[in-house]
Length: 381
Image 1: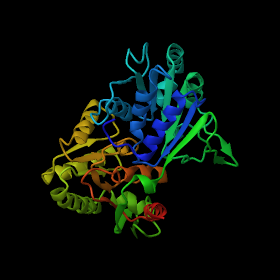
Image 2 (image 1 turned 180 degrees about the horizontal axis):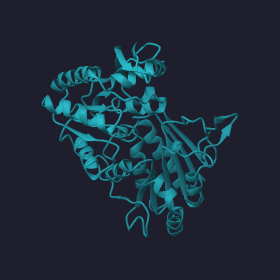
Image 3 (image 1 turned 30 degrees about the vertical axis):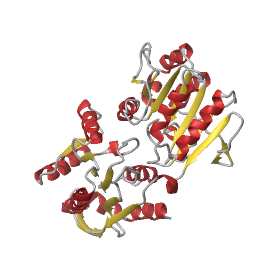
Image 4 (image 1 turned 90 degrees about the horizontal axis):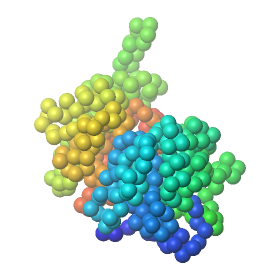
């Protein structure tokens, strides 16, 4: 490998060595904090285990955008590997003579027999990425069972060992309601914590007042940090307050770019319509930006590829800022989203706090509603 491996990546190489020495290891649980470099692990597994321990690798991800990024990860010049995989959904011969394929949980759920047949033809390493998306007893759980049963090695990887809805995660054992994360003869646990993995982020959270009209017609006013925090947040994301916060973020980004030329900025919008307004606001001020929303179009995927390559340095997005936007040069995030799920926000922040050569800091700009402040305090603790 050309790149210097992080601790958990080196541990994965060691687990591969144990497997090749004949240890009965069939399962790896990989708990890596968002931003810790999990996406390189399938490359390590393919490079070390194919063809000695398995014939192919199958990488399952939560969304189509991550599927295409997974395919590109094997082409990254940082990795000294001849292995290649393809992005595939369903159909005959999913790997097509390559070292495997990357697909989505949705595709597996739509045609589980297709993937079960593929696993009957080849011995696979099965890498379930962000497997917390699969609830115990769900349709996806049932669809994946034949693949898990047939795989030579199963890797359960996630930055979150819990679900927002409180349901148990599929394929993860529990003791007294908590995940059982101990090494066994047939299982290895590889973990990488936030403190070891990432650059601390500086939070600039800004308060402000919002005024809106209630259904009965009377007007109401509240500070973001006030009693009507949720309604105030919904309002300010659609007013000049959002432009004010966006302006603060882009000014810091511009100043940072003088010293760190590779710096990138990410703007997270509450929906596609507002994302387009934020994009227009940046374009009117001469910024070279692109937009990639959750519409998951070929143009959105191309814009993300160009963003990663440094063709431009500002990306406006919606849900695609969640898992898997692997661009370590992102140094400024303007979080203008209404989502306040702790796992979602942690993933959003992780877009900025990844290590990169020359990068000295990570900065998050966001509204100061009470739910956001609560998450920030939890993370800082």
